[in-house]
Length: 126
Image (cartoon, rainbow, N blue to C red; front, side, top):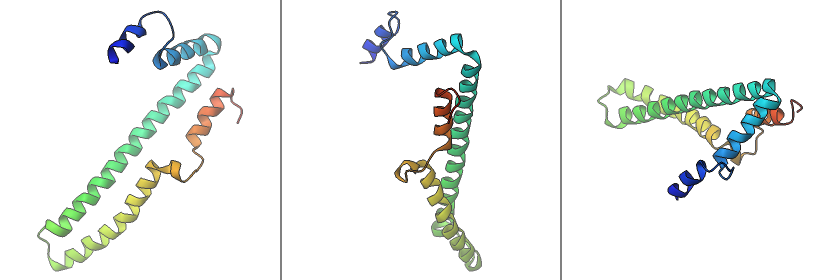
């Protein structure tokens, strides 16, 4: 399958999704460079936001796993055990919020980034 796609990439026709996206971006740069620049900045910011949220989510998950490990496998004094238990309970809510972010499409909420991308496609009208 990959061999067929690689053969079609350089044939001068638009017959893959990558070529279609590249062609649309080139047309936008030719017809309306200001809109293309705006679109590019929005896409760059979306990628940075995604990486930031992903990083924070991983920090949350690893902290939760560390607290669980500490609670069940760490050698702690009895006073510290209660504190770690409270922290695990608090982190369950934090973990639930992180899960809600990654699976937001089940809640049918409006995504502001999606609206902004659609606004660019509609020439800035919302």
